[in-house]
Length: 321
Image 1 (cartoon, rainbow, N blue to C red):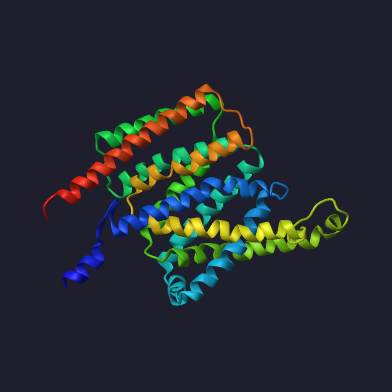
Image 2 (image 1 turned 180 degrees about the vertical axis):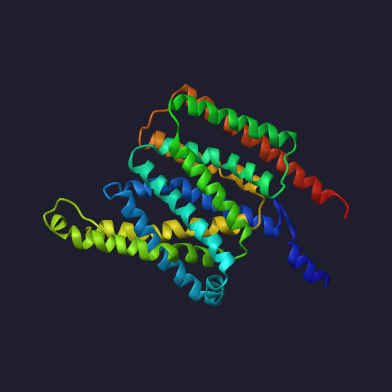
């Protein structure tokens, strides 16, 4: 009986229970992959964002469906389709993640990676807000201070841009609500992703087939491809979007079911920090002292929150049961 209880609760580790450690590692992997993903999608700048998203949907669906079949979870997939309530939730998450994907790819294609990174700096604040409102999560004074520092940084960035950063806001709020809804749905991460991609699969496939047949003449004249009429290298990159998309989303879903939204919110700073570095040092997007000050405030807030979280976990494990 004691062994069963320990298995369910997880064993203490450096970052907490075994379950929490798995969640932290999954989150770390997801955010690093999201951080470097602009490089991959920049290679596809010659393809329209709508086409890229359509390929992402199709190949992600195929890749994860094979994973579901290989891991013998097909029965769970059918159970979701038979459950109207859960299916409605997945309709909502599908719309949210679709809007997030499209906005992200558009920002990369239009040399606005920094604005995209700002969106993912705002996103943890949205997660904290949603966690407090819907999940009754609370912050102590140090956590509150770190959030206030991050808010100040976001304000500085917004003022520096000089206009409403709609790219940032769409990315932040679409993924914030996506995380909240996926946390509430008790479905395996790979199964959930199959549901989301298959719901959009007919639309994406129909769109690409339409482009393929209506743009075949232009493609043959060398004026550019469309749909499935690209060169082999481009098609391989488009096919690879399935893997590039599926792996971090699966890792994120694993983390979302094991960690508080406030914890996930702070860890998500990793992805935009990597994106910021790529925007500045790889693609030469402008980065002045005001932007540097904003990012510095965010990093200070992250350090404060992380140290406080570590001390809180240490005290919890040290306390007598």
